[in-house]
Length: 213
Image 1 (cartoon, rainbow, N blue to C red):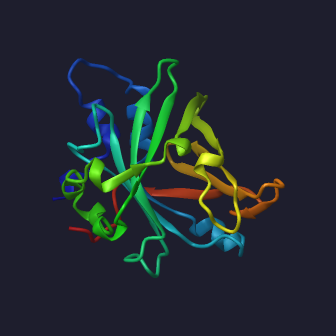
Image 2: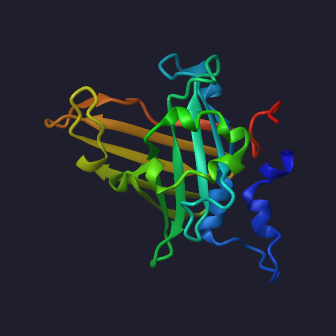
């Protein structure tokens, strides 16, 4: 069963044709897949909550249309069965060579909770099960050893604490991830999200947590 979790980057490297480097979308998807946490940052900064993030590639997803699809689930380590954020990501290349990460939220999050243990089950989720948050799409550009990009505007702001717009910044390396999501009111004052800087996620493994089926 563990073979289902072979890192996407390895699958790309094993493709016929002898290509040595994966396409940008495949590389981003491969770097995103795995188990991350904010443990190290939380120890150093009491304002940062300890969180775990699990991201798995979804084989033969109905949302694919030829692009890699990932499922992400974020939870507190002491409540892994109660996700605080979850959804699907589709990683595409645009005409300019950038990588677009599209976000899809679940209409019924409970239906997918914990299914990173069996990614084949996630392939059954289709358009009737999700809502695409088009304004939240992040376009990434390669910067030497990492990718970075952001989404900003009113369309991506959840109606939380009076926010009228939000920004979402993402920086991705092969061994870590930084995310900085913030909400602002009409006066430009920040009303939610970390103020000091991004959450820093350390990649503990290219696989889901140990002990899964």
